[in-house]
Amino acid sequence: MQTLIRRLFLGLLIVLGAGCESTRWNWFKPNNDNSAKPGATPSVANLVTYLNNNAERIQSLRVEDLSIDATMGNQSIGLQGRIFAEKPRNFRMKVTAFGKDEVDIGSNQQEFWFWAAKNPDPYQYFCSYNDFQSGRVRRMPLPIQPEWVMEAMGLGPYGPADRYKLEQDGQVVKLVEHMTTPAGQKVRKVIVINRREVRSPEPQVKGYLLLDDATGQEICAASITSTTVDRKTGAIVPYRMELRMPTQKMRMSLKMDGLTTNAPTSGTPFVRQPMTNIEPFNLATERIEPFGFQRTEAQR
Image (cartoon, rainbow, N blue to C red; front, side, top):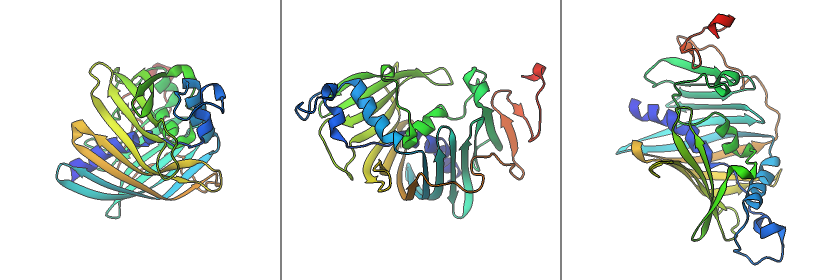
């Protein structure tokens, strides 16, 4: 059970790569030509516009009832959680199991952090965005970049279009982006989109893949199985998703109830707080730095 929860800690951020989508089909037509025949191959620019238009409807998002059914091998566990997100970088996800805190992941304008109760090292990992973007992080316990989280929650942005190449594969089209992880691994991020027009709850954006660029092996995959329409904004967001991590033999099913958009956030969910008997570990300096610690220039 401890191993399962520890691996879920790594998987929870990855699953957020499932993102949000819309079914405003005229954006798919080449060169915005409304007379184009349904099923015509869209341009990369039109697909990215399609994703960004949905993202522009949402400034903040909250999920009050996140249900997670996870299976690894023959072992299963049920988790509950909450998610708060605000553009451009404010994010918080807390997950519990059997009434106890298990995962805490957060971000604000200055830094990001994450903690898991069953992680082998009892640390609250954190790092400033300045240190991360300047390449000072040599070891990243999570296999994704922090900025993917906001993009994955449907807050975008998904452009510019020149990040992607377009591939066609039968009844779907794919937006493919080549990039390098913080650990230096070359990967492909793939957004899989249904070529035919569908309506919620059927997903237009079918899934997000992370592939090893050298071997094509699937590192993880998030499939959207149903969507819901936010009545306030008209945005279409995932309701049910499934995550696969083949190398870990893990599968997770997520259901997001109690979702609201563009509502004021009370309290301080986007502020990292001290944790009892848990030491803060700076990923950039690779050492423990308690709250209130000030680094000198020689230590930076």
